[in-house]
Image (cartoon, rainbow, N blue to C red):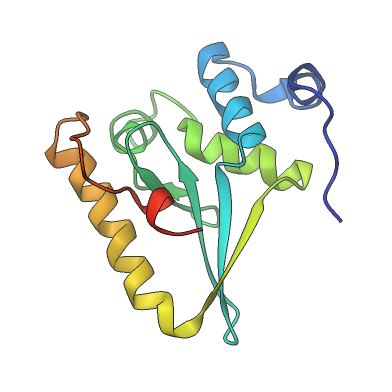
Length: 143
């Protein structure tokens, strides 16, 4: 059963051990409270994918590795400049706090979902972080 967090301050206090980079920590807290950490479960197989809605794209997160599709992960985490990107940090806080948003799909939607997710990630890189009018993000196309 999910934990109920009443305020941003309560959540920040509970997970203060992750607050080494204060601005990243605050972004992660905002993402968690905004329902941006999602587990997309495909039924009846039970296959699942985690995403975190970011500023420029919906980022794929694999918490078991850990891995994130964002540029910060590539440039900062893999080069050991940072322990986490804010997407993985958001996942960790949401998971430990029981605040991951569950989104269910039919197994037949898996291929389309993965195409949209990959397209969203690639488009944000191609656009140089500039979002153009009329292009739909994964988080806008799916529940």
